Image (cartoon, rainbow, N blue to C red; front, side, top):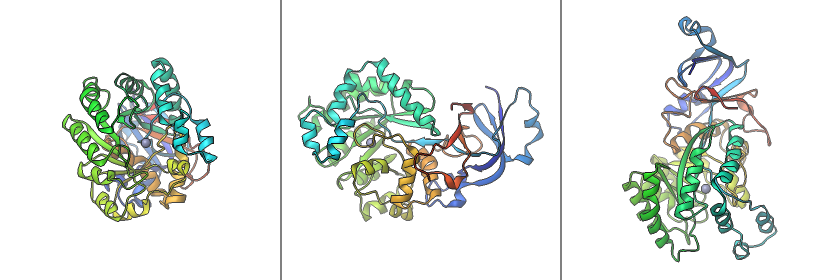
Length: 411
Ligand SMILES: [Zn+2]
């Protein structure tokens, strides 16, 4: 791998100060803004960063040095998309029309729609076909500046096909991929009780996921009437006992104990958090749990938005993500997510930028590798012709001009 010198950076956002604050109470100062900067990259990692005028001579004069002029563009860390359900077959567009025209979810499910329709199609699709459509979706994220991408299983709900989906996710190319086992997404029709299904996942599937090194993360959809707090606790504790990191879909529809359980188990993240109240806000703020907020899903679900301001002001670490999935968030629009966070959750722009870089890197436990541009970290960055104040601003905007992962051009 040749070394690379990036010169003529018009405006650089390192996010290093935000990283130092662990993504908490981020202000404009924490963006690490500087003009006329340069970055030196060695073996895919940042090895020097500073003023264009002060590039050390021994670096600039190396043989076989690749030089890339950013021509005055803005450079910021590659985005970290930390919550997607990207591997699935089929579409639920027809169902969206029915739901939007007032049909209940129960009626749609009776007609063969809902998550079980995605499950059926995902089980039936071949590895090759699933890989093909999934790679296209990954490419869509790359084109928006995403250099680290989380992908959950959870649309197959049986041993063979959950494993298949994790293998497909791991095989996808471009960004750094982080896989998560979400077998406990919904209960498949083969099981009478949620508890029995969790027992099956724990005894049969988790050992396979571990053995085949398909993921080191386990997620559960904790919700009243679905996976209860009590059952989820037992399952996640067992997963932790096997060496998995844990995270939760928490308090999306009702206050059902997900956030409380996340803090109790020291989970990497609690995701959604729409229904949490003051006690949960305080607990989360004092914990290491990253609060992953998913406003595009809230837009589609026409529900309220999570209390981002309260969380941030109390000192919690927040991340943002698309929740891309065929049912409740059929969008990969990262820009829209940030815009909704500003408009509907009153997050400041520096908070949004930090949430999509620093906050999300913590949610994936990659904060020492990505999320900010600092010496020793992966040279993951995007270049855009917009200044930073124009980010997450215009509907339909496409920011990145170039995207680099570990010093290699990927877009
Ligand atoms: Zn989700």
